[in-house]
Length: 367
Image 1 (tube, rainbow, N blue to C red):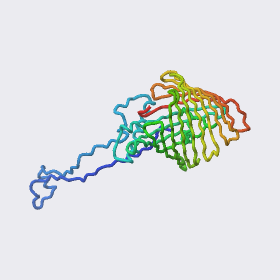
Image 2 (image 1 turned 120 degrees about the horizontal axis):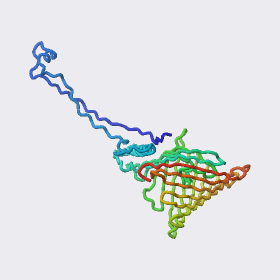
Image 3 (image 1 turned 30 degrees about the vertical axis):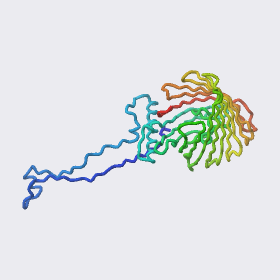
Image 4 (image 1 turned 90 degrees about the vertical axis):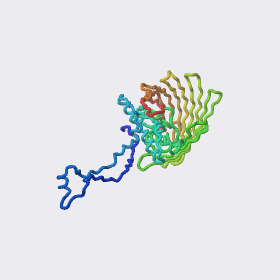
């Protein structure tokens, strides 16, 4: 992939003005038997007809030009790639938003943001799994500030069903396996201000042949208890052409232990018409701050599926390090751990070590 996020079409509208001819002629008309050529030879002051047109119209500024900063430093190749992604994301917002009105709001288009990550995860059980992911959210202010466009390459089922983990740079292993990644595009609805009782909705399609459309709605309640606890309860209802209807119930409970430690308990259950049963996991994560640029997460997880021949499909423990590099928009993610998978009755539950590494780049004006 060459990091091209969107294919942009620009329509250049030209204004044509009819030409008006101005002819410079001698004061007296031609005499009998004289031609224009002989008159011009005899009288050098007679000029040839000159066609004078309107001055050329100024060139219209394109969205790519308007989104490009006045001063673009010649940095490293990575900085140039990030600058190109930022400009392309802004111009994409301008082009899509232009379908809904004639105004241009480049201040808001420049708020478009996204991430690109590349990495790989290896485990003794599943082998080597390289991944390339991206996400971009486009601003559409002429339509509605609550509407945005979305494009991404990510874990399709996890995104649509809202069963993604806390760390998105590396592929996530939920419900015992690693799912294939897909390119999704769509429109989303959400309030710009979070109140603690929030409704979101989205509609989109998986870019594939044949296309695979989806719709999802989500309602979340957030409450603070005794100043140190935060509880989040979220219900997601979705439909996908290939999967049918489904729902995901998710609950997080956070407890601040100190300025440097926070513990989170997450439990999740997902049901779809295809699974005909409940897929679930429960996870305990201890977050530790090692400074303003580095953090650690220690995770324990158990997961299963009620319609599988082995209902407890995996136990796992892992340590995840996430560090903000220089420049500030580049992040390193490292993962190491051990899992104990068993998906079939014929398998033995044995230790399976795993390691992973990923680099994530943020682009746009929102971090």
